[in-house]
Amino acid sequence: MAYTYGAEIPYRADFYSTGLPSSLMGKPSKSLVQRATYYDKLNSHTIRQTIEYQYQTDAIGLVTRRIFNIYTQPGNSLLLTDTTAYTYYNR
Image 1 (cartoon, one colour):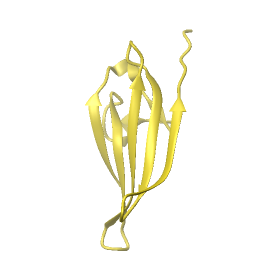
Image 2: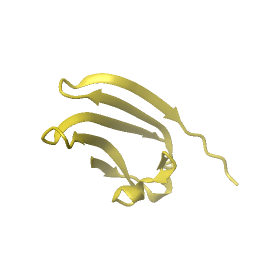
Image 3: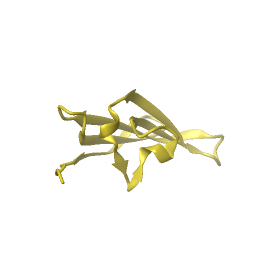
Image 4: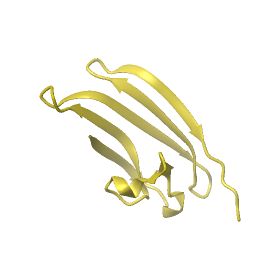
């Protein structure tokens, strides 16, 4: 698996995906994952799937939406698309 990261966003937009901070994927949490590429180790390391992420933020830099598209390879065929909305509450 290989990750591609997008431009940095303010640290206050610390983002959690699948319950783990993105900093556990090798970059500070201020750099959100832009693309994940999955390789087939049994078939000459060919690409078998890619996931592309897009983010929308509010005026202060908090992630309010995450949109992802999953593509199967070869052929870059769209398998699934999903949007997750996030709401923040002040404590």
